[in-house]
Amino acid sequence: MEWIVVTLASGLAGFVDSIVGGGGLVLVPALFATFPAAHPATLFGTNKGASVWGTAAATWQYANRVNLRWRALLPAVAVCFAGSLAGAWTVTVISPEFLRKVLPAILVLVLIYTLLKKELGRHHTPRFVDAREAMAASTLGLVIGFYDGFFGPGTGSFFVFLFVRWLGYDFLNASASAKLLNTASNASALMLFAWKGHVWWHFALVMAVANVLGSVLGTRLALKHGAGFVRGVFIVVVSALILKTGFDAYLR
Image (cartoon, rainbow, N blue to C red; front, side):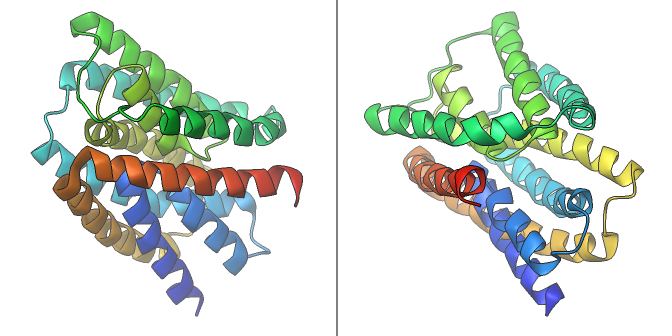
């Protein structure tokens, strides 16, 4: 039964994450509910061991169909990888508890802004070129990569929102670019968890297959229906994140 629950959750997580991020909203609670006595680091590590493959699969599909801005994104990938490592190390010496309290409010602001700006992310009009775009993308990669390693919830959604709001991408291009950077931050965190022995590979490998299948389906839907569809899923996922993080911070 444990295998069935976490494998199905991993497939659903891959589907959601491939479109707009937020797969951890599905898979992490499922792991904690299924294995309540396990060390949290082991469950986080197992989550990364499964989700990194789905994120990589989504990145590959997007790269074949979306004109990614590689000159800006490749430096950002390297910076994001380093930022995630730094965040993962920082959480070993500083508690992220303060973020748990403020995260719901930040997500509410993101949701309100997205709802008020009806045209946000519907048109792909990058604001920067060449070195300025690479610098902006790298700054985004460093900050959100650090956040992913340090705390994590909503990482994919923050990537998408900032690519749309700051760099001027539409939601489809933002999601594709976010997948590339999120793959780097996931791989970085997975390396640290694996080094510390906090990955259940016998679960992670089976979950990875389901995650990839869900990711392939979600990516195809996003590519078929475009930026408007991704925007709609983004609003739903951020709303769910607000409820989940608010409950964790103030009601649990």
